[in-house]
Length: 241
Image 1 (cartoon, rainbow, N blue to C red):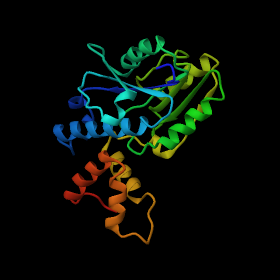
Image 2 (cartoon, rainbow, N blue to C red):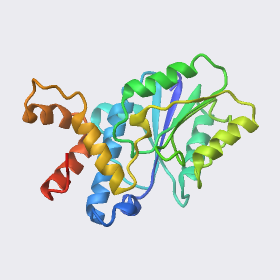
Image 3 (tube, one colour):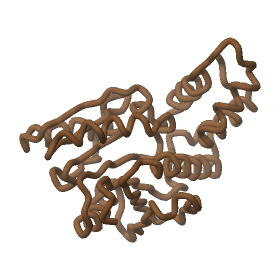
Image 4 (tube, helix red, strand yellow):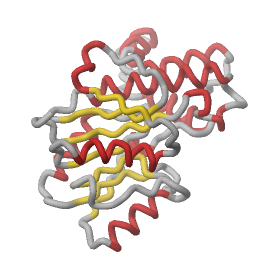
């Protein structure tokens, strides 16, 4: 692992307890499968980031895509609970290895692209110590948190985590950069989030020369979780364009 300079921390809570705010629209089985697909999508994307290692902190059994296995370490959280505990578990492991920085990424940012993450990591390379953040759409959560080094602050993913991390950076006189990429701000918590993500994804790179079937084929190959949601709501005739 000596060549890996960025630790990618992905906290994953029990699928059956995830996305409860969507329970009026998706069954428990559907929510669990959605989480599985989002994890798979995120691993596939982040495994392409050079000089990095992915740390999944979870009590779930996560099937790792064959091509990503060398990049992934699974850390079982045991009785620990919550994102902060999950990050602490990864931090202890990271302490024993050589990483320049860490990035905490939740699983529910379906429009995330590797290009955007590279922009953040490239920016951080110019600093010895820095915190880079992407807020959620409502500016109450932290969708992306890069810490360089990882021990520069402890995470605070309780209520209003974006403000918590912002204040910790200021209190510790740490350089701080906030990125406002719309796709990274888009997380999936409510049905409104789902509908907005579907529409943004479906209309991305829209060209008049392409037929609708061709557009779908290209888009659906990019993101399994979005394809799954799109199929559910199209079958119910609940998606309005």
